[in-house]
View 1 (tube, one colour):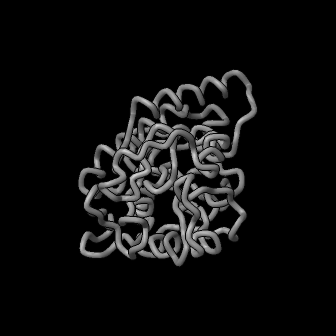
View 2 (cartoon, rainbow, N blue to C red):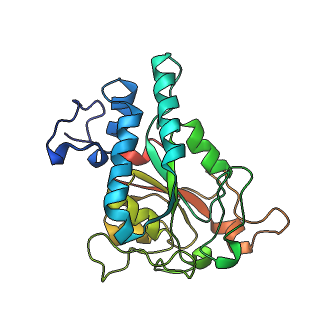
Length: 250
């Protein structure tokens, strides 16, 4: 199966371990869900199984709520069955970085003082992922305040590179890169000022995209505080994914 073909032939997976759904790219997942070859619930359950298998060792995702993800998958399946218009990521698992506002989750920034800083609404880029049909699976780890080339903090601990624990997964989107490289999610949200998407992608052997500044709507500071000049002029929200094709689904 190739992800370079815009209309790949996708068959329902069998029992061979090489054909497990969590191994599929986001493009393949989205096409299969939209075509009714697999359900979003099957995809999400497969990724949750993979998370259970490897996340306790890698610590890439620091908060996962199956009781939220599975109903979202069921709703995605209902919408497909009802013939509703589907987004490019319909039914596809995606993770969100701990420094991005996601309604009902603390925007911890990897800092103990912010462990109860609950977000009341989604940041614009997170809301865009929801509108695209993504199933939000969990929160990916980051160094404190997202200003390091590794991924470790006092609140959530250290994230490992899935290929070699002696090497960094990169930073600051190291939880995202580790999660994608290990098959927990096919796409993970990241953000980048000076390399925080690009370097983790390199470190874990996945694809990272830094969009043009201003191309993706975002918020990245408390409502009552002005963002720093570096954030205003350089920060972007960008995905990490399994393949270049998957970046085009954003």
